[in-house]
Length: 217
View (cartoon, helix red, strand yellow):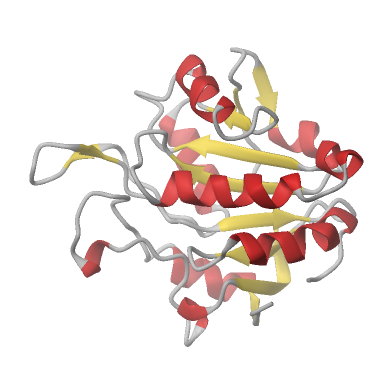
């Protein structure tokens, strides 16, 4: 397990300056990155000594019902990721990596885990579209959509920068967003572990059993 401890405030300052157009270009300048802080760009995970507070988000789930993030995930191990269903690379890869690792857990632990995918492209990612996309990855994953400004504020509270969907130079709609996955403890509800786009199935497979218990990997 590759890890390094950093204060959440330091990561917040670094991550909010890091933005990528997910799948919009082959240029290295647009390659999605999670955190740029010293040598952490090559680390799969960062353990925070000052955990993030869980975002106070009330959005709409894939069934069209209101979903209060804090209330629904209180006391449960939770992974949160901001992305969009039309993303051709980072988003599906990240979610599939987590899904594969989750299947290695005992059934009881799988049921405890909450994996929340919050869209950064609410204009296209309706509850129905989110539901279809996530069903093909893991039916237990939770998809949330809603007002972009609300979603953006929630992401920023975790040091994740996102911007409104725009057209790239080729006229393709893209959503610029950070690629961090934040793990929240079932004991404190704090976001104490941050994964970047270097995280593999093996990383999640090794770490999830401890995350379920609220322990540091």
